[in-house]
Every structure is written in C-alpha cells, then in structure tokens.
Amino acid sequence: MKLKSVTAAFFSPTGNAKKIVNEIAQEIAAQAQVPLRTIDFTLPEARNDDGTKGEGALYAFEPCDLVVIGTPVYAGRIPNKILPAFQTLFAGNGALAVPVVTFGNRSFDNGLIEVRMEMEKHGFHTIAGAAFVSEHVFSDKLAAGRPDEEDMQSMRRFADAVAAKVRGIEPGGFDGMAEIPAPVRVKGEDPIPGYYRPLQADGSPANFLKAKPKTTKDCNDCGLCAGVCPLGSISREDFRTVTGVCIKCQACVKVCPLHAKYFDDPVMLSHTRMLEEHYARRAENEVFL
Ligand SMILES: Cc1cc2nc3c(=O)[nH]c(=O)nc-3n(C[C@H](O)[C@H](O)[C@H](O)COP(=O)(O)O)c2cc1C
Image 1 (cartoon, rainbow, N blue to C red):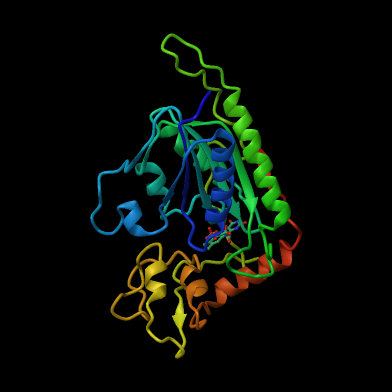
Image 2: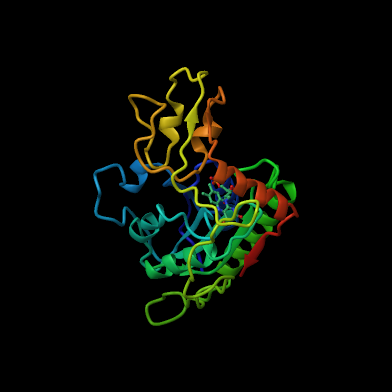
C-alpha cells in the first residue's frame, strides 16, 4: 500500500511523548517518501478545550494517511482529563494508526491498549503499537536520561518495521481499497479494569489528586508556566494561583528558568519515594507488530 502522508500527533506536557512520536513518524515518512504533518494537542486551544467547546473531530484523515499518535501513561492509562481529546478530536475515515505510549519506568499497564481502542472506535485501522520508556517526571532517578541512544535506535527499527508492514498491505477488493489487517494485538486488558492506584512508601494508598504546584519568591512573573499548562489552570493575572485542575504533569516545574515552581505534597513525595525504591531497574520498551 502506498501512503499519501504521515502525521505525528501527540499530547506531551514535558516533551518525552513528542520526541518519541516525532522520531517514529519522521522515519516512517522518510521510508515512504511522503510529507510529515504535526498535531500537538497538548495545549487547551488545540483540543478545543479553552472554553469554546467545539463540536469534535477537528482532525480528519483519509484511507492512505498514517498517524502515529502518542501520550504519556498516567496511572496506567491515557491521562483521564485528556481521554475526551482521543474521543472527539480525530476522525480516521479508514486511515492507518500507530498508537504509541511513553511511561516512566514503572509500567504502561493499559495505556497502550486504551489508545488502540480509541483509535479503532474513531475510524482508524491500528497496524502496530509501541510503549517506550522515558524519564519519570516525578523523579530524575527513574529512567534517568531516557530515551537514550539505544532507545532511539529501537524506535527507528520499529518505524522501519511499520513502513515495511504498510508496504506489504496488498491493494485489493472491488474499488481498489487496501485489505487491512486486523487491529494490532497489544499488551493490556480488554475491558480495561481501572486506573493504577498509587501507593506511598509504607504501602498505604497515595491520594494526591488535590496537590498543586507552589511558587517560591524567585518567581519574576515571566508567565512561561501559564503558557505551558495543558489544562490552562495557572491564572494569567497571578502566576502563583492555580485556578483550575492540576494533573501533576510537571510542565510548569520543568519550564521555569528560575526553578520557582515545586510540589511539596507529602503524599505525592512519598509515592515518588516508593517508585524510586521499587522501580529502579531498567524497564524494557515493548513493540507490537
Ligand atoms: C500524573 C502522572 C502519572 C504517571 N503515571 C505513570 C504510570 O502509571 N506508569 C509509569 O511508568 N509512568 C507514569 N508517569 C510518568 C510519565 O509517563 C513519564 O514521565 C513521561 O515521560 C511523561 O511524558 P511527557 O514528557 O510527554 O510529558 C506518570 C506521570 C504523571 C505526571
């Protein structure tokens, strides 16, 4: 089958999913010698989530398009506040899709299968999937420096295999439509049982849903933090105030040049210590073709 275009689509508050999706999509586009498009739906404006509440399916595809679509895994799933984007923004119309997730050295649990299910529900044919490890935004001790060169090479190998699989899809049928393989089988449970429940260092449940970033006196009101918040939750009038929901993505913490944003919620910090203690090993990437 001959592709017409490849799209890199991602939600990526601190850039890991973006890096991984871009690498894979670029390599597939280069192999297929077709243009590469980008859809970054990290910010509320790109999701029609800025109060205007648009009517869904902003991004429509055609049968000879391929989209590599990715997100970080939060609590073993698609971040729950971003699930509506997967359910309303994309119309496949028979396009091919490659679901990709990134995870911070613990587990991707049901994140990848959830992306696969959503894409299949919205008119895409999923032909491959992958879960790649990247540094956990809560701790520089978890998957530090990943994706590293070894990971990047394995992304390129995966992309080459996807490109070969696409080439191998035989055109056939009465109107020249390609014969599409069954949805890719990936790791995960169907139906999905629920979200991963975080634990504290002592093994008790860790509920830190209400935690929000705090601001030190070093803040000089540059406003970068408000510009990167995927939920638009940092006040544009006072960058020290969180007016909406916080998903703990760390975009504001990582973007601040003065390191003026931080979390000090004791339960959240205890969960991070638990992760550092139990998930220090080098987690493996997993690809599905
Ligand atoms: C709220 C939250 C929950 C997370 N849950 C998981 C998880 O269940 N398993 C895991 O391995 N990593 C988890 N992570 C780590 C992220 O998947 C990882 O840091 C990823 O690289 C972030 O991607 P980004 O740079 O595109 O924002 C979580 C991160 C956050 C902020």
